[in-house]
Image (cartoon, rainbow over all chains, first blue to last red; front, side, top):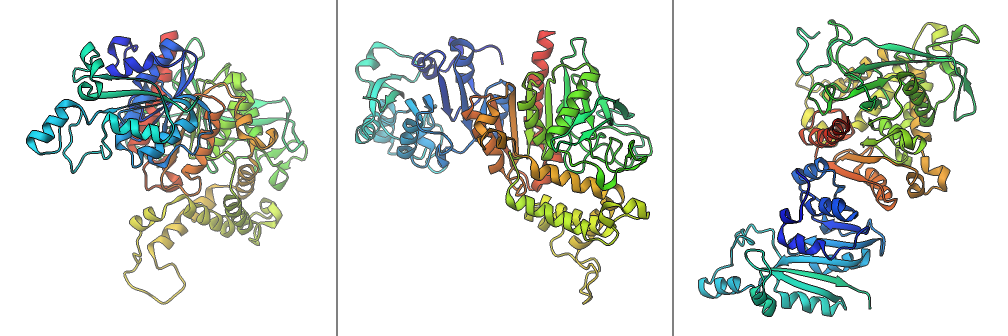
Length: 206
Length: 384
């Protein structure tokens, strides 16, 4: 893998990297091949660990020199102490765990801040797909059929914000990217409708 | 016997002997005034002397990790599937050193060596050596070979304990630590297994309190029992079921106490083979070294504090069906390393091989090992 550049990052990762402090420590839940961690290490002197369960992705992380720990997110983060990490990141994985609500609590127990991205089920195309076709929506972001999808807990941005409110989680920042994974003025006006991927920066701090 | 040596073998290798006249003070306080270390090397040391990899052996291993010592050898070295040209520990890129540890019975100074002070074999008088003593002696060997810093120190099981010890004892001399199927210390259950094995040996009438060589005998029955017990704890229940099931040697029950099930014959065969090649006093010593290993004890039993001394990167690997050194034991190491803010990666490999899996050719295990070692080699070659 060639050195990570900002342009080469997936758009949600490019936005996230800006929310992470230089010289801080990051835990990346479902880190894939370690692209974000590698970028943060090379450009912001961020130290961290990625958690992953896919064997090929774990090997890729090791080949990329990214610290990767084989760990199932459904088992929680019991091996990490309270407030031991600056930022806990989870990109496009919260919808695939058994209990997103519990994992969100775990993220903010271990981390001072959390960053979560997920496919917004309230995206206009998803709404239209269900309304017009009467079938579970499928798209590039949601490529699976209802019966074999790993995305067992899809939600809209409104759903997610309600969950945060019920747990006294403060939203520091939120943004969305559209189906081309771009940010522009229109989706800033109607993010819950026009955003395909939702990105949240969260904390429990007052 | 290999008819032809395979292309991915290190080929024919000759063990070498390093003799040290500098006394080595052991953890027990006793001193070895002089000693030999027998070792093999594979591959070439680069001009920067930066590509050396140390292989640490486990309970019954030795210096013969890869290749063949002669064309008459039935089998290659004990980790030949991982060490060789193009293999995960690639001898085209690394200079690999494997030695027989002190107290061993394959040529390094141990119970079957002559004690220079008495002119007789040490036998049971050979001092009990600890993991740190091995690491100290390995450092002396590294000095002899002109290796200031290992690119990696690699080991499984008891070998992994030596790797952990290297990381905290000589932090400046190790760049990468590969700890496979190991533990930060043995559990009570593990110590108990070792004690049953030792008792089997000690209670053999031919043991003579360890002086069996003076009686021109060996405690064969005891060693066999010890190995049979050890061996079955290295296998998983699934692996034994698949390999033997309840198959009978003669296809029918004979209503006798002779071995009737295939699994019994297998254990007898393994025990028999081992009892003729391995020294009983060495077995006693090696199991003691396992029991004593507990590096955190020097740091108020705080493993995080202990591993904070390390400067190297770590790769930790465990196997799903290993119940002798279970994944949870490896995860203790991993969690402590993360808490100590060290670079660490961890893979838990799906395998039905039990503890023995660390010696087997499991594709995912070797992919992980290869990815880690290749990255080290890439960096070395970029800096060359």
